[in-house]
Every structure is written in structure tokens, then in C-alpha cells.
Image 1 (cartoon, rainbow, N blue to C red):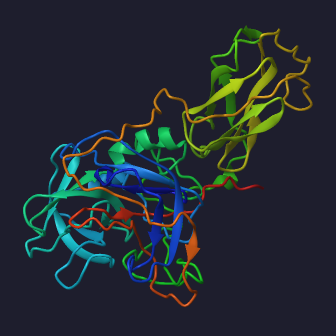
Image 2: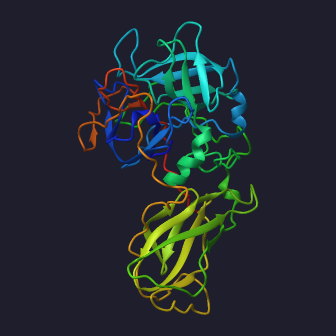
Image 3: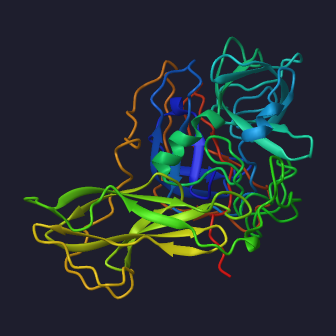
Amino acid sequence: MHPEVVLYASHCGIEVNTVTFGEDGEGAPARQVLTDECFKIPTVLGEGIDVAACRLAEPVTDVPIVPILMGCELDALQVGADVALVGFGLAEEGPAGIKRETFSKIATFPGNEVAVKSDDGHGVCYGDSGGPVMLQLPDGGWRVFGIASYILGDCGSGSFYSLMHTNIEWFEKHLNLDITPCHTPDGTWDPSPECGDFALQPGEASGTWATGCQADLPLSGPDVTCGAAYDGRSDDTPPQVEIVGLTQGQQFESEGPLPLKIVARASDGPGMPDGWGIAEVRLVFDAKEVPGGTREAGPYAWNVGLPTGGYLVSALAIDHAGNEAYAAPIAIGVNQPAPVLPEEETTGGLETTGEPTSTGEPPTTGGAEPSDTTDSDSSSSTGASEASTTTAADSDDGGCGCRQHDSAAGALGLLALLGRRRRKSPRP
């Protein structure tokens, strides 16, 4: 979903230490990447919210994108539509651990789920949980719209997938990352520089891990499925950004470091082509960017701990065209008066005392860590055994794929990765 994010089925659990990339996850894994954290939406099977995510310790940038079906593209979700299923689970022709694909049709939409069933008995099986279901749009582009959750009866008798687009806002708030390059979480067309160059043949294993998995793969170019393509060159207007919820000159009293939630509001003009969206917002204290204080998606909020001192709080907003703007600084004090702002309220060259201790994690409001409960499917999901990052030999030409190491027999444990490059704001 993002260079640092893997999305999968929550019933697999959140104790995942590593993610493995490759076509054959058991015999010849091409690469293993550590995870920083994993979390899931509290739910049980059958509610259509069987979704979890892991944030990778390092970005993976050489897997072509198959974006989430969003906005006007959802019109393609129709009963009878042809879909492609991908997984590493059990199969009649061999054991689990090898990436395979098959084809089916949309049968119905029970709640937040989509049910798929094929007349020829082809479908997912044990070991395929978390795998994607995709469809092809009329323009030839592919989209992923569901996560394999469970089956009723025997393998091939029909399977249920949790819909992706209904959970985007929840994950973006927890990750503070933008995982939909062409749309806002509510489906509004909002293309970024990453809205394009999508894989046109996601089922083809092309390229090698030595040369990068985009080698020899045809890509789509700028996407125009729901509106005009991104063209940041037409945007030379800086974004707008302000700190909200703090009063100029406000003084706080605290026996220890003051826990404080800082919120910024940012926008990029009334609409395209005047503005192409906010790429990121960075927290600024005393004219310096705070390490770890970058947010790619709203809410633009930070939890900080402030010892005694005076502070000038600001934020730097950068739009997708590379235009930048600072919020007017807000002067606050902890156990002492707030510093006096100079006559010109800019963030450059301001002298204050005290430093923030840390930016902490995303705010607890709308971003609490989900509880790790056991779903009705009792399968568990564990990470690979080694807590290190390794790369396979350069001769591996098996193409690109990914799965989670999981030795639990009968468990549905596939991790589906839809990689994309890190979203960066281009500079003129």
C-alpha cells in the first residue's frame, strides 16, 4: 500500500517480525524486511473488517503499484464481474508457499464484504488469507479491492474478502501516511505525483531482485480514471497552514514535562489546478524541524512532552508541486512566560529557550492502538525467525511477490503487499 506499509488479514494476528518478498516464500525468498509495528482494527470474522497493517522498518521501492479501487472506480464492483485472486496457500497441484493466481466472479456484497465464487471450483484455500482480489478496469489498468478473509465449506466453494476502500481513513490516521495516491480517504479525486506508473500486468513475474522488480514491466503512465492527471507544474501557489488550539502567549504549569497535543491545519487552494494537495506537514519548534515530526496524511497532529521553557511552535507545509509555507509561530511557555515574538512573525532566526523532548506517537484521539484480540478463526501469525534484513543472491529471477512466514498448519496466513514508491514532494 506504501513503501513502508503491508496490509493483510487481522485474524492472522499482529505478532509479525518480518515480511518476506519473492515468488517462492519457502524455497527461495528473495528478501526479508523487518517490521516496526503491526496493528489491526478490532473486529471478528464475518463483519467485513478483517484488516491489519504492518509498518516496515525500511521502505521497499521496487515493487510496481496496483492501487486500491477508489472513488468513481467503485462502479466496476458489480455482481458477475471477473476478478483475479492471488495467494500462497494450499493448491491441488502443490504445497503452500508458492505464489499462484486463479480467476473467479463477484457473487454478492454482504455488508462490508465481497463474496466471490467460480463455477469451475477455483478459489482460495488455507494459507491464502490476506491475499488480494483484483479486477481490471476498461482502460486496462488493474485495481485491488479486497483482502482474503475466510471460506465457507471446502476450498473453492466460495470465499469472502474484506473491502479495502471502507477502511482507508482508519489506517491513514494510525499511520499518518497517505496510502491512496489518487484519492482522498472519502474517494475524492486528488492525484499526487505518485498517481500513475501503475502495473499493467501485475500477474507477470518480470524483472529480478538484482535489477529491480520494475524491469521490463509495462506501466500505465499518469492516471486519469476519475479526473485530470496530476500536473504539479501548473501549481506555483504556496499552501496554507496554521497551528490550531493554542493561544498566543499561553502559559502552562506542569510538575513534570508537559504532555501537549499540537494540531496543524493545512490546505492547498480551492481545487485543481490551483492546488494539487498537501504532500506533507512537518512540526517546527524554535525554527527547527523536529525529528520524526513529518506527517504525510491528516490529521496533522503530534503528542509532545515539553520541559520548563519557552517555545515557538510552527509547522511547515509542502504541497505536491514542492511549494512550501510556514505557519505563523505561536509562542507558549511552560512554567514561565512565553517568549516575546519579534515584530515580524516568521520562523527564521527566532531565539527561545527549552527544547521539546520528543514528538511521540500519533495522537491517541482517533489513533489509539487497537487491542490484540483473538478472532473466531483461531489461526495465529508469527514473523520469520531471524530479526535481521537479508537479500537473496542476485541470480534470483523469480520476479516479485510476498508472503508471511507461517508454519501453522491450516492457518490462513498470507500477507499481501502492494508496494509503491515513497511519496516525495518534487523540488523545482
